[in-house]
Image 1 (cartoon, protein in one colour):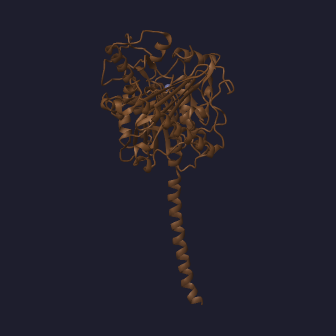
Image 2: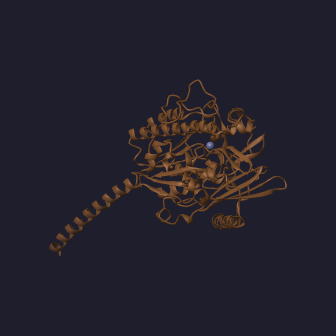
Length: 490
Ligand SMILES: [Zn+2]
């Protein structure tokens, strides 16, 4: 027995050692695999998709985003959930539609803003709970921590004077933080505000198109579409005037992309870039005189028109991937769920959306997807639904509420080129009864889907935002001043 036992014991020991070794190897691999990637989420404020060269715009406005998109997935028809900064970011941060998170405009000038409710979970809170070091750096006043969007960020840099700060200043703050070598994994949120009016392109940047900005200013420098319409300033009307404004706007997009490129280079220098999961999108676009009937639209933040909600959306997973484009309508509020699923984090109760990196979606039919945007305020409610073929827009305003419906046939402008679509479709105001019925059917289907989803997850349908009953905030004087300088709150 002893003789037999010896070799057996050796064999057992050997197997044990081999097994232990295998276990150790697996443990090492598992440890390496369980180290989650950094997450870099960038919003290019006020950047409409059809002015982004990474999505096909003829002017080279975004060479750095082009490079990112060449190693990831870009969505040519992504829509923000709202047409202005605060509710749109709140949707990106919570996965919820504006009527669900309730953050946005308040009822009057004394209580103009409804902040993000304290009981709504944010992306930063989830990542912080998962061990991420979280930091946010912003360039505009509507992302002030006053409005509840800083929750979950260990560091939130919103301390600046003036109505906006450019990407150069934002990057200085980011690099200070990165250079302190915070322990990874990191969640870095950046809002480059450059493309938001007033348009004052940085004259130290060399632009590949248009006249170099005059450091002393010219008639079109400092033009702000939203501000001009609100304050009754002269609005450009001739093709030359509009072209000059668009050049300034495009230069501001180029500037934001320039700062994005600087950020990429810094992360590469730290050997953090390649291992990061990167998301680049925008919170909304900008209207430049597009017409709805007799009304010319300027700026953003009124109703969810395509020119104000069609935004870029690009994912680049760690290590990059073969370039992929998806041309069906999607919502950038789905960033939350997509990120969690990619990181292997179980989505908490109530998180909505779809996984935009799912191969079944990316290789599936474009007809299968839809996107929704909303505007809800004391003024009324607007809801937009984009399907593959149509944009349906329903606006209810006034007391008693008067409901208007608009339907745009997206195919009607196909000859203008894909990226002119957002501008072209809004010029089409005529609507046949059959198209109208189709649009209503799309909306009914989406409503039913949303309601069943909400019932399944939370047991109730969230009420429409009622600014009178929601928690309101009085604005601190400095925040109010900055918003007024940008043309809001008048
Ligand atoms: Zn914005």
